Amino acid sequence: MRISEMVKAALSGATARLRRDAIAYAGLAVCAVAVIILLAGASVLALEPVVGPVYARLIAAGAFIVIAGAIVIALRLANQPRRPVAAVKAQAEPAPANAQFAQIAMIVEAVMLGYSLSRRPDRR
Image (cartoon, rainbow, N blue to C red; front, side, top):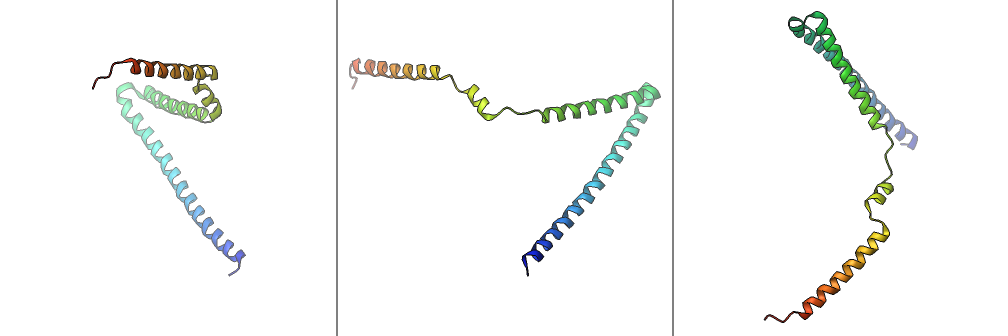
């Protein structure tokens, strides 16, 4: 079997799988739209005796507006540029002068502790 035949066989299997997945997702999308339509109709029918026919439709439309607004906000937040990791690390790390001061302070503290422990009488 030649390499070109192997590539052709692999691609035909991959394209068949992609075609099958695309058909399945299209069917899923059609079902999702049908569910949304049926739920909207049922919610309007359930709200009509309580608030009237006009307000029932306005409430259903308001719910769709809220959902659409949430989707728009989510998409805008997802498309915002992220800060580079180096900038975040630079903010998290202390300034070099502060780090050097902290190192000197720890050394001085260790020397003072050693001195105080050496001056203490031995308790055996």
